[in-house]
Image (tube, rainbow, N blue to C red; front, side, top):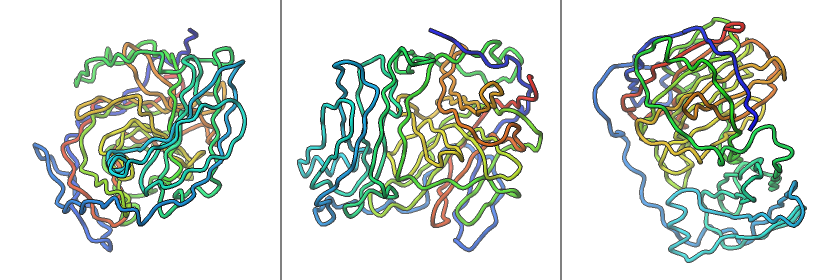
Length: 389
C-alpha cells in the first residue's frame, strides 16, 4: 500500500472551547443574530413536529426514465446497480405499498432504465462492485417529486469503476477505521508527527441537495436563512485543520414538502473573492435521514458529497483538514481515521493557492429563517498551515 504524507507540524491557531451556540428562532425579516450563550444540557426544538406523511399513491412517477453509464470493469466482472430508499420515511412508504425497487447486474456501457410507481421521497442509486474496485462515485442521492428527480434535469448517472492497477490509493472500505480516544487538552503532542494518507473514501453525490452559499464577507449573517458562529481568521494560509464533536441539532425531516434545513460544523478555506472554497466536517440535513454524516462541499463541484461508510453519533469526534497541494495545484479534504492515518474525501482545483480566510465553525441554514435550538456543541482543535509549518 503506497502512503502519502503531508507536512508534519502546523501552527496552533486556536485553543478555545466552543462550548455552546444557541440561535433563537427569528422572523424571516429579522437579520440580526443573538449572541452565542453557554447553556448546559440539551434542548428540544421549539418548532412543532411536522404532521405525519401520508404514503398515498396520488403523487407517483408513472414513468421515471434515466440513463446509466458504467465503465472500468475488467474481463467478465459484473457490478450490481441498486435503487434504495434514503431514509426511514421513504422506506416505510415503500414497505406499506409493497413496492420493490431496482436490483440489476451491469457491465460496461450505457443503458436506459425505466422505473414505474415510485412514490415521492428520497432515494440513492448505488453500485456494488467487486471488492478491490474504487467506485467513483459509490452512488447518487436524489429526491423524486411528482414524477421528476429534483434539480437533476439531464437524468444521467455515470459510474467509473477503477481497478487496483489504476489506483494510487486503495478504497477506504478496505481500510479499518480506528478512531483515537479524543483528548480535550490542546498540547503539542496532540498533533500527529506524520499524518499519513492511506486511502480514498467513496462518495455519494447529492444531485438534488440545494447548493450552499459561500461564507459572507462581513458578520455572522448572510441573509435571513444563514447564520454562523465560531472562530475565523484573516491570516493567509495553505490549510485549515480542526476537530468538532457531533450533536443532534434537531433538524426536521419531513418527506413533503422539503423545507430546507441543515446544520454543519466544518473547517473551511476560501480565497479573497469569497466565491471559491472547500469545506469538510459533519452535518445533518433535512432532505436525508435523521442522522449526522461526514460530508464535503466545494465551489468546483457545487454539490454535497456524503460519506455514509463513517457512522456518527452524538459525541463522535470528526477531525478534518482542507489543504493546498503545490505538487498537483489542487486542494484536498482529508478525514482522520485514527492512529495518524487519513482518508481523502475530495481533491479539486479551486483556482487559488493561498486561503484568504480560514474557519473552524458552525453554520445553520433554514429556508424559512426559523432556526432550531441547538444543543451544546464543542471543538477542541484548530490549526492553520503557514508555508510549510
